[in-house]
Image (cartoon, rainbow, N blue to C red; front, top):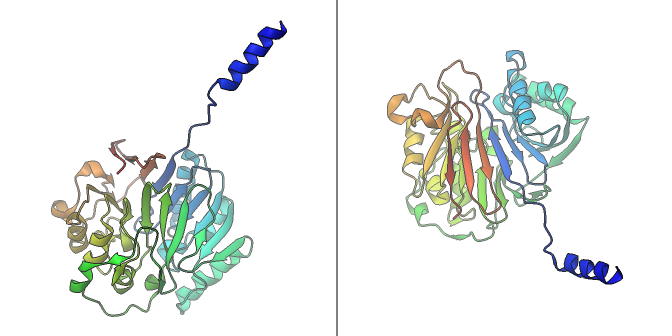
Length: 339
């Protein structure tokens, strides 16, 4: 009996150890009618919500965020990152906070704008934040989420001064870059970041950053490098998204968080479609101003009607960098192999 137990013990020691399978990174682009609300769930289960949409509308945006969070198995928001202090991004924070636990808020510091609406947004945001933790970040800072690297690249008008790993080469596209007039608004102060997963997948979200600041990120040197997934800046408007940055980042897939009558500018659409290496562009909404000539095929659009049901776009990323994009309206999905 003792010899049998000894042999069994040896066999158990030699048997391969079965480790739990690595989980996917999940991103949900939630329809908030031309604002932003992007829910990111790391492989470790931590959650990052980027912006919270609009206020009002009987809590429409808060309800849509919570519905998607439930599908993702998220019971609290670990970090709510506010890109900037405009109504379509931070206005929905109080309504969401009343209904759903938020542990920490991330921002670029206090609102840089003043006036009745700006002061109201600031006071409502501060009222909510006082009950939670607050992190104020600058370019180069890293958000402490396990399993992914979330690195701030723009904040409060400052841009990343040191290149991200593998980036920093001289950018030939800068020679033809044309600057626009300076933007003094909160848009140009947007808190933007690059998310990297296992050095296999990279996603960039620059909030509503505008033209000149976008060019600064990649000129004279491209300090960002290339990305796999690009959330079109400023809802796909043509006061953002110069070809200098879009074509420098060379995204494989772009997602436009436009509304039916906000964003999706035909001029910006053409910049995306001509970006080298772009495989597909997906849209949250059919852009009325664009018509059939500049909207993507219906299969890639989450919401076709102006008064819609709030369908979302989901991106699932495997540990090896392969990612699948899903349109919740029609369940159409497409997989993009790891590079």
